[in-house]
Image (cartoon, rainbow, N blue to C red; front, side):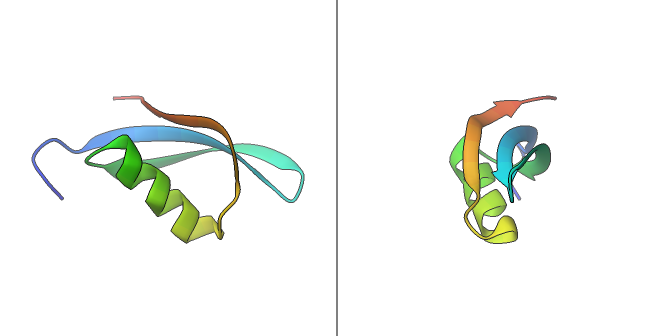
Amino acid sequence: MGAFTRTYEVKIRIAGFAQDVRVDADSPQVALEMVKRQYGNPQILMPPRVVR
């Protein structure tokens, strides 16, 4: 990962349950791709936002 890695929070829905997922990524697009890969293309309720 690059020097500008940030922690992003993405709100998703899996099997009817909403949950917040945190990932470390260089950009919001990368964060979204990581979440999709990890959770099998879940419904995105809220786009990635920086938490720190």
